[in-house]
Image (tube, rainbow, N blue to C red; front, side, top):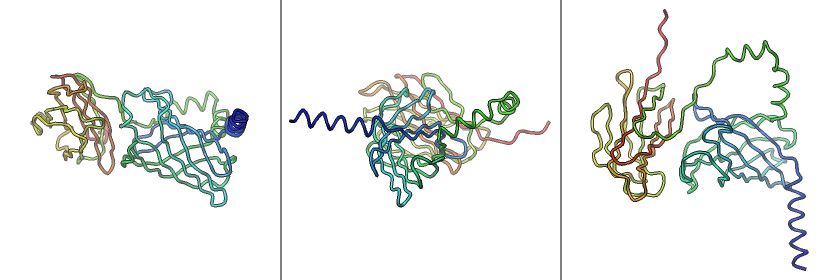
Length: 288
């Protein structure tokens, strides 16, 4: 009897969830005016209200990450709500504490016939703490395929190749003797440094334009905020690892905020090694 009940449960779940046709969306996560991250979303409506599925961030990129998604759809009110809650796999070197999960609530009148999904989302870390917010800009994949067929012509492809591409911010860790140049719109920035994982007594010296501003500083989960003003063409933030803590290597999470910019990265260093984050103020190109 118990075996039969288990069989029926598995059969019903597979029939409802495994056989249903998922709703597929593709597009981007918009963090600010200059940071767009590829985002794919697959949603299954398993009953009148419950939603299950997955998302893929940076598909095909070095930080490709697949996360499970859960939520609900209220057809009467025309509301869709979902959130990422678990990482299936990732190509990113970041640990689980670094991932910012999407929590979205927006309008959707019809599930099967929805052509787009747009709206603001809230970002939360796995422990529920708030991280970066942004906007979802997604289109039904079937609609994208139709557009591709219309634009898959030599003249159109040539025009698209000449079109201006969106600049994105690299989130790769900064390692030994690396200098990462980041172009920013604002001349006043707020830098936060902290340990995004387990505190392991990592110590650093921090230099701003070769001036020592933090000496023998122990990295903790509490964010240390440092205001930076770019008075010249650029400002250089140099991190020097003084040890490797109790869990090598020495890692420091770095977040940079301004009204127009957001940069998030991490240093990964052995004792005595250094890494540099160089902030370059964007400017208009001079006419020749």
